[in-house]
Image (cartoon, rainbow, N blue to C red):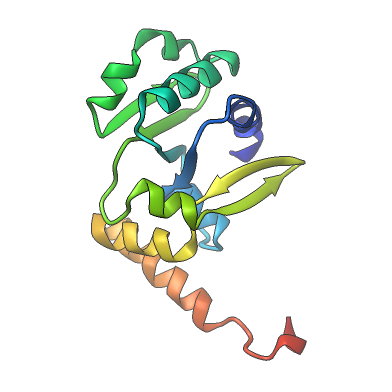
Length: 156
């Protein structure tokens, strides 16, 4: 999945899009072993950021970006872009405010490409608030992974 998203993340970076990865991919990146088929991102819900997001999608080859507008994205909690991969863009999500998630984001890297992911704590909060069975299972596995981390620094 990350291979197909590398150009998207590069375009986000180039266009200075403020976002954090949430959802299933964020769970996987924090160590939960599960399959997921799309990318969920929480964006800063401002006209300037959404404009940069649409520019980034267009540059990354997402033709669907030209079928919507800044105002339409801001008017909805979720906008789905589906070209070669599905990306759900959220302007709000249960249990998480963008600015807090941005301040606590984790910077990760894949094949030299930087991208931003919600912190483990924010991801747990969001998934707990969503309350779906799959989200609650992710919470359980994230907490299990936390409890299995070595406490002695010499064990890491």
